[in-house]
Structure formats: C-alpha cells, structure tokens
Image 1: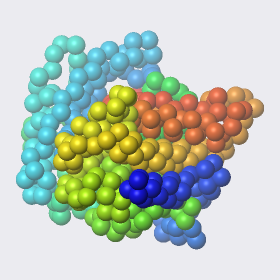
Image 2: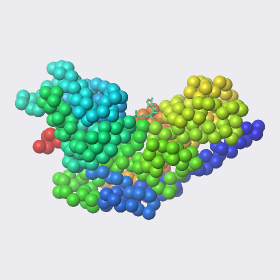
Image 3: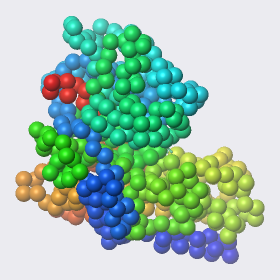
Image 4: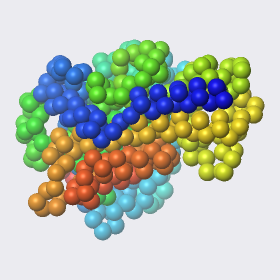
Length: 467
Ligand code: ADP
C-alpha cells in the first residue's frame, strides 16, 4: 500500500509540473510570436524571455501552384539515409503522372571522412537512379535535368540554390565541409559522375513539406515536422522581415525556416526530469522546446520518471531494474505502443516492460501507472506543439475570424504525428480550444506525407517555369 501511495505521489507531482492549461499555453504562444518577431528583426537579437528564434531566410518567394509540368528530381539528405526521387508532372489536369524513389543508407565511415567521399557516394547513387529510368519519364530534347536538394542540416542560405553549412548534426562530422557551399560540392560530384544534372533548389525538410502541402492545397500556410526532431516553416510577408535587405519579391512573401526546436521560454512547464535530460544531452541549453515535444526525447523522459518511481517507490518490486538505468533505452515508439495498449489487461505494456526493461512480471496497477506516465508526458508535448502552431497563427493574425472566411491549413509530417494517434488528436483538440469556436473551423491540420523530398522536386519544377 505504501508503494502505491508513494508512486502515486510521484505521478501527481509530475502531473502538476507538466500541467499546460490554456492560460499557460497562451503565454507560450505569445512568447513564440515574440521570439519570431525578434528573429525576423535581426540575426543577433535577444529578448528578455529567452532568446530569439533563428528565423532563417530561405529565399523561397513562390510555392508550387499545381500547374508545373515536366520531369524533375530530388535528393533528400537528412540523416543516415538519403532518398533519390523523380517525378513526372502533368500540369493542372494531370498533376503527378508518375513518381519513383529509392532509399540508400550511408555507410557509417563516410559520415566522418572527406566531403568528396560522401558526395561521390551520393552522386553515384543518383547516377545509377537516373540510368534506370523507364519510358514513362521523359525529358524534353536539349533540356538539362534539374534537381531539388533537401539538406536538413543548419545552413546559411545565400540564394534559392546555394548555402553554406553552419554545422553538422545527427552524427555527421566532416569538418572540411563546414562553411562550404553544399550545392557547389554536390554539383562537382555530379560532374565527376559524368551526369548532366543541375541543382536548382536547396531547401530543408520543413520547406519541402510546406511546398508539397501547397501543391495539393493552396491554403497551406505553414508546415510542422514532428519526428525525431521538430521544426516549422511558414510563409511570411517580406514587409514583416526587417532583416531582409534584398529586393522585394513579386509575391511579397518569403518562406521562413523557424528552427523552432530551439525555442525556450520561462512559460514552458519544465520538470526535474527535463532539466536532468538537458544537462546530460549532447547540446545542453539548446533545443529546449524540441526536448519537450519530439520523438528523440519523449520516451527518454518517461524512462526517467519510471526510474524515479522505481527508486523512491519500488514500483517494480524491491530491486531497481538494471535496464531502466540505461539512457535512451525506451524509445518514443515503445512509449506510444504502451500508451495506446487497448487490451483489457494492458498485456502490451507487460510485454514491453519485460522485453525492453527486463521487468519479469507486473500487475495491472503497475502497468496502469506506466500508461498514466506516458499520458502526462505526451499530453504536455502535444499541447505545447499546439501552442507553437497557435503562436504562428497569432503572428500572422490568423487567430481571429477573417472577414473573407480565409482558411488556414497547417501541413504536418513526422513519425510522432503520424503514428502517435493520441498525440495527434490531443494536439488538434488543443489547437481548437485555443482558437475558440469562431476560428477553429477555419484552421485545419493536414498530414502531408513524404513532402520532404517531393517538395524539393515540386519547387525545382515551379522555379524552372518561372524562368
Ligand atoms: P525523422 O524525423 O528522423 O525523419 P520520423 O519522422 O520517421 O523521423 O520520426 C521518427 C520518430 O517517430 C522516432 O522518434 C520514433 O520514436 C517515432 N515513431 C513513432 N512511431 C513510429 C513508427 N511506427 N515508426 C517509426 N518511428 C516511429
């Protein structure tokens, strides 16, 4: 009995500290909008409540319309895999006629050798892909193949088709690449393969998702990725970007890559578990918002809470399970499978606790406690993600009813949104609550799958028709 009282106390304390009621979410959204304004004003501005967002200029000032025609390619590099893709576009009526893609995994060794080695490997896969083309794909006589490059690492963009690498993340460590133009390097490697192809767009995955979303729905205004990490991009009026000193684009708009994972604010509900996770992470003090809401961290937060329950309340019998002490052993995928266990005895929770944490037998009460912990961590994450979207809507003035009944669509992609049904539903209902009845019906969250690569090809197509 003492055990339950004690574990229950840990749970209630967690609930209290993770609480994100509407009032607090409104403060978070206001802080997000303020951090957006600060980041748009200049590149080195700090505001009182945490720092400004990077709000990177993408140079993308027009998005696909659906009229695009022809054969275009994309290369999507954002982790240990890359994808090559081709797409035959048939214009307004026929839309996407045919599309093919192939995934290739990058040998570990190439991630830290030289840039030529990495890009030669990628370019040779690309050449192979192009050479395997069937007759459904055709390039007009005399036309060069055009490629959109999705490169999801921090880049300082210098035009739609150039940008220098700020730093590697996700396990890559090719020092000589830092500060170099990634497009120039890849173009050279493509030449070395004897391939007649040119990179005409350089984007990241959020801009790809925005573009792919826009291709199917003209009301798409922002895109959010909720996967291993999290980020967002949206369409901003150039007049609201003081740090933009270039010419005014015809559309009057520019896509901004927010790098919102780096958002922080005193209004974020942080617990002792979050503070410890951050301190022991590879990037302490950075990506605080990401550490609350993304797939790389949610399961790890749950592990830390369960470890406390094991330590303080002997939740899993007298000995603390050894595996529970291993950082990152519990992934967000495991977490969602336990959380969404619909069996009456919570059998899946029991199996997972055994398989992953080596906990032999658990009673219903223990399993239910684990589910409750997952629910608290996922609810906080989903509600904070909704607050982030609400912050973007506020910044754009789309949080209030518009006289012309303008619709706003948010394109979302990523494993957490796609597979964690509870998360997706909680995020949606929270956003509706925040917007209130009058406005909620005009804002839609829409799943846009695989936009990361497709979006780059669609953008390459749309820019090629502009020329
Ligand atoms: P990335 O952001 O690296 O492109 P994803 O969008 O596929 O990757 O998201 C991966 C994240 O989603 C992981 O943190 C994983 O724990 C979580 N996830 C949830 N459900 C699944 C699933 N069914 N398959 C893969 N990942 C999943």
